[in-house]
Length: 254
Image 1 (spheres, one colour):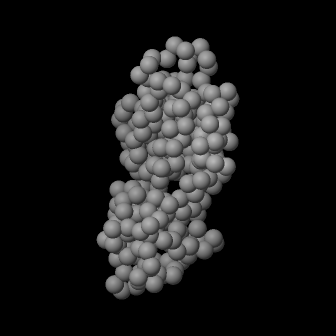
Image 2 (cartoon, one colour):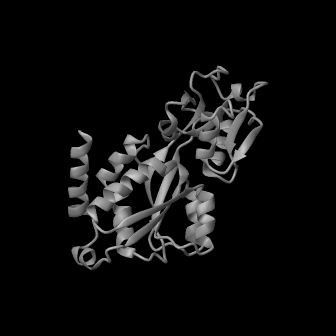
């Protein structure tokens, strides 16, 4: 579907089916904002979702903070003001649930898988997980507490391959950046991340039997300053139009 036409349809669908109640929209302040904390891998997809949501709610600004889900979960537990939390894994979402910071049950809105990422042209000829441990290969991985780092450890375990010596990056996009800038010969990121640097990197597939499925939950937060908009945003992310955008950026259905 032509992009401009799709955005028109998205506006109509959100306004008619997944927007906030008309009475709430009519009374909303002209400079109302919605703060969404989301895992780094969601950056491009959520920015587009945010634009579509803003079009359907004139006067609203969606403010995003993207970082490792582990970092965001800590910030929420320590009282950081936010309306919505979208995590790249369920364990960090559970931390927020256990801290009593959610106002609704988390909903799985997307899934993802991992891939090896290498610079364009694959100069070190990386073909498998075992190749990451070859002499002379510099590897970047997300830190163990970060979802992408935790998932990578699971992949190495399933493949019965010793994890290589690697940097421990603050989030998955830092891994992608290191490879894109030729500061690492390889890394492990989500399949959806490749698009963000497609002109500088390429993917080396991880066999399905060794891969993992990352499940992404989203929820409204207990101290949301705009509960109506927060609920409407979560509803839009999980709606067919929101799912279409996520699929365009390489995410899979829940």
